[in-house]
Amino acid sequence: MATVVERMIRAAKLDPQLYREVEQDEGAMKQALGSVLISSAAAGIGGAGVTGPLGLIWGGLAALLGWFVWSFVVHFVGTRLLPEPRTRTDLAPLLRATGFAAAPGVIRVVGVVPLLGPLANIIGSLWMLAAFVVAVRQVMGYTSTGRAVAVCVVGWFLYWVVTGVFLMIGLGGVLLI
Image (cartoon, rainbow, N blue to C red):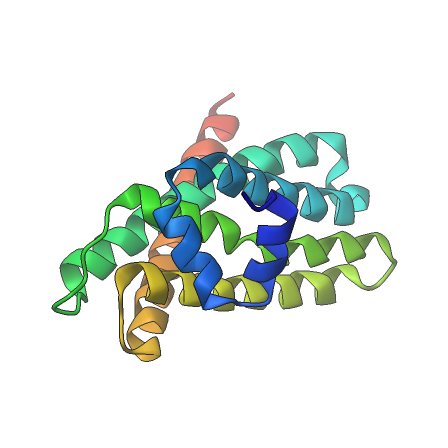
C-alpha cells in the first residue's frame, strides 16, 4: 500500500489515476484525513505569525469541516443537479479523493517567509481547486472537465455561503456576550 506522502505527491501532480485509486480503496479514508490535516497544519505554520498557536488548532478543525461541507455540496450538485448519465458515486469515495486534493495546500507553509504568505495562499488555493476538479472528474465519471469545473465552482460558492452563515452566527453570538 502506498504511503500518505507518496499519494499526496501524486495528488499534487494532479495524477488522475491517484484519484481513481483512492476512490476505490476503502482503507484510504484515514490517509485522506491525514492529507487534509497535513495541508491545514502547513497553512497554520505558514500563517503562525498571523494566527498564533490557536489558529493552528481552529484552522485544522475548520479544514476538516470545510472538506466535508465542500465535498457534500459537490456530491449533491454533481449527482443531482449536473450529473452525466453514468454518474454514480457515494459520498465516501468522493471524500477520499477530495481529501487528497488538499495536498497542494502544503505549499502554504512557505508563508513563514516574510512577504510570501499571500502568494503561497493564492497558489495553494488555486492548485487545490485544480486538484479538486481532477478528483471530482474521476470520481463522478465525467467525460467533461468543464462539468467538473462547474460542479466544483458551484460547490465552492455554496461552501462560502455556508461558511458565511456560520461566521455570522458565531459573530452574532460574540456580539451578544
